[in-house]
Image 1 (cartoon, rainbow, N blue to C red):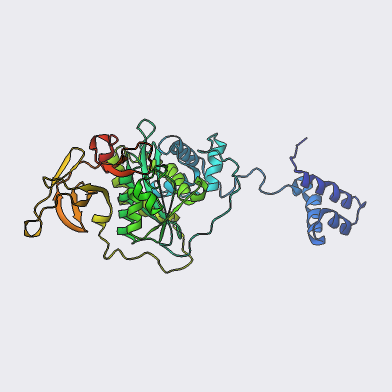
Image 2: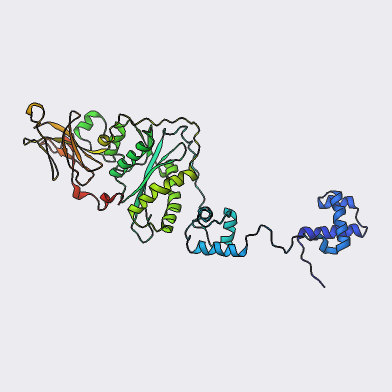
Length: 427
């Protein structure tokens, strides 16, 4: 006897319509019981009478769907996912297959193929904790978020490096990004310069409490106590001079948009750099600048609520002067300034005047060169030397060691104290 596989729904139809054909049940009552119209119930009864139970089985039973992905293509996708594109998430893999292999396949279809073959998702999704959503800024330039993300960007066998990135809160545009060995004041000054050159001066910057951005110590100099506030960091001073309001986040979730940016970049950027054979910091920075930033913005940038921009023009802002490391110094009797092992000679001023005992502002610019300012006027320059983050300490100016107020804040230039590799930015 031939066996016919039927679903529970088809079996119910067989039993009810069998009662109709045997005269035990009215067709109208059968239609109500099956939840179909009387016309369709009549059609089903006719099929059962003419074809038997087979007439109630769906016609596509046992057939391959016309839209089923061919087995050859399935095997090709699985081979690529296991070899060349190993480590890509499902959405990223569907996009990269269309871009590089001319294989157009939906994310859900691709996901079904991978899971059926036993390939697990790249990242396990944990239940998200509840956080209150922060509304995006209305206009571009109203708020910029920036941060640094240490990670093994070049591969698991390479040492961690840091990706510095800045994103506009209004539309999620990646304004600037580059790789550097460490998250330092120099890196933030370079990032600020890149943002200002690209879009202009933002109204505010949302940031964490990294020591390069915020003073986290309880040491107050005499001048700070008299002023009622601590002097900002080197980066903080540059923000003040550009009239950019700093906003400090209290938790990683508070700056969630830049954190999500790094999540996307760690997921996608690392995979694509590995795919394209990027294994040096210099090549990675070139890859970011020439390809990745533009591609990211095409894929993820939103439309801001207002078309106007609140970025201010950088016209009149001397970025070379403002984005620099600052030292307060006193000119010695031999008309020279000494910072650590560095000596800068001060040439004679107007009418041969001497600057001995004058308090001057000494700045090391991002290209390593030096300028000495007196009353905001340039009085000396010096060639480039290795960039080094100024070391801050408080010098006691009173003989009474119990008097904490009698301290003077000083910054020292010690290039040998710079963490190894910092000067290889972009190399």
